[in-house]
Length: 239
Image (cartoon, rainbow, N blue to C red; front, side, top):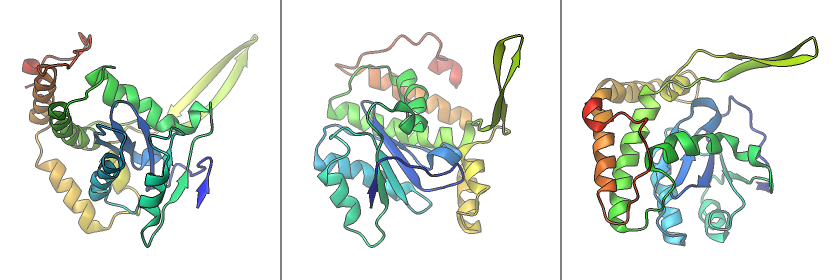
């Protein structure tokens, strides 16, 4: 039940890829709806690794079919394999090839937009950091999945004119991860109605303001390094 590279297509749901960026973050399903899911990993121990995956799995609304980690032993290890094999429905375990960054490209492209742009490149090591980051990630999960449209590549081709090669891309209409997921046959009508109700009962402006407030609280803590983020909208302007 293990292979080196995942070959799932864009229409497949339930395939999680994860990658370390100061936090354990997984996108599920990566390719179809950019459903970002974040769970902080404080230390590379068995308990923290399993706790992070349990939190992600508890929030999934579709079956978990595949886990695709990078090659680092902090994620691809005996603890991870044992955790997923000790169950009735064993997901497929694949991994990235060494020095092939595009094998995990759907996670890599979100390292910047979902983590680094908001929190910077510095480490967060204390339990106080963990508690605020967990609260922040819960709100980011709702904000990005319900209110942030994502473009998906439809097709691309090249043309050559007088020796100059140009690449042309066409995109599907922008959809939020929730809309993209509901367009698949994976969810039953009751679950779709529940997710849409959660979205409709959430005020996105208030949610955004709460995200900035938690971020400010995080960087007010000792040992938290504030990144240079002049491009961000100040918290008071987001309200």
